[in-house]
Length: 139
Image (cartoon, rainbow, N blue to C red):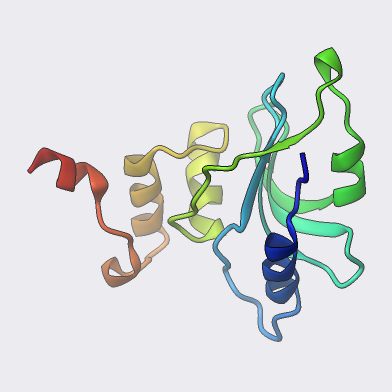
């Protein structure tokens, strides 16, 4: 599997080249199909290898940091499987919101109520929050 398509590469690189420090929305989610490691990545440095995002190796302490694309591509886990891209991932919040929610959960989470709580704790204006799908389901 191609971890970073040309389109994703261009978006990551554009985020990494931004003149001002920005709380980007994650562009791609990578994961170990045979283990707990997960990465939500939002930026790529001009070197074409250094990715930045939320890194969770499964020890209960996810953190913002950098990771090498070459190293991720070279990982062979159990059963000889490598790191994979979540083809269905669609970020709804900024990276800082995912990081805050992960800090509380102890792992990267897609739990919408927890993400909304993290967004509110960080002071994300309600107008910037995506529609509450749980509220739409109840109607």
